[in-house]
Amino acid sequence: MGEPVVVGRVGRPHGIRGDVTVDVRTDLPERRFAPGARLVRQVADGPASRPAAGAAGPADAAGTADAASAAGAADAAGAADAVGTAAGPGSAGDSGAARAAGPPGATVLSVVASRWHSGRLLVRFDGVTDRDAAEALRGSFLTIDSDECGPAVDPDDEDDDGELWWDRDLVGLHARTPAGDVLGEVVDVIHSPGGEILAIGRPEGGEYLVPFVREIVPTVDPAAGHIVVDPPPGLLDLD
Image (cartoon, rainbow, N blue to C red; front, side, top):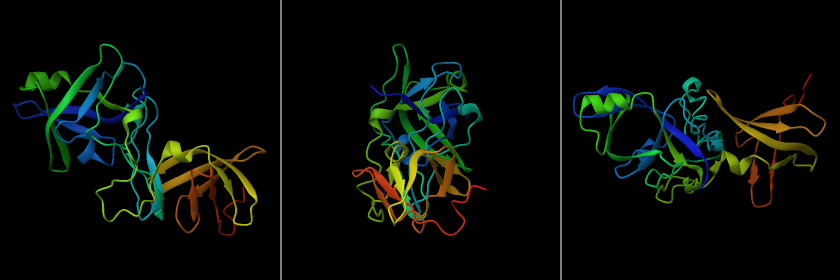
């Protein structure tokens, strides 16, 4: 069993029939909160979860990664499962229909229905039938198991160019220039409002921050263990 990844946080109740608002921490809510999806509930002061297993790629496939750990999710912005770069490689999210596993004693919630209302996601869980039961869930984090994220690319998406990767698939890849010069190793994928950024740790210390866009990162080859960075003038200047 993997580690929990936050996909949402329960907000206030909506109506009197048990619906709750959800602060979405994934860019694939249609999967995470599909009818039948099973999510593990963790209270705010419960066990910490791992950082989001987000997806990243070129800006054409832009998205956001799953939110940060349960311990720090209260301060995290709503990130999505899949992140992308403008016109470049990307990473994708998990399947909402996947079984959610949790530590012994964890509460597993099964999604009955979900819908958008005035820009907010409303979710109804099995067994939550009134406002009091919905209020009892308020503030809880909703997680999935990192081992059940599923493929980064949606096989049913005809418009998907296949250039989406999970953050964990990118971290650890060696970065080099088209001429073969070694830049370092990808140590993080930063999901910023302006797009995804690869943090590349330099062998001699420090980091390069490289926008994850196709024009700058033309090659991503997890099987070979490397990416190619074709930097514009000045991008790699640290001074």
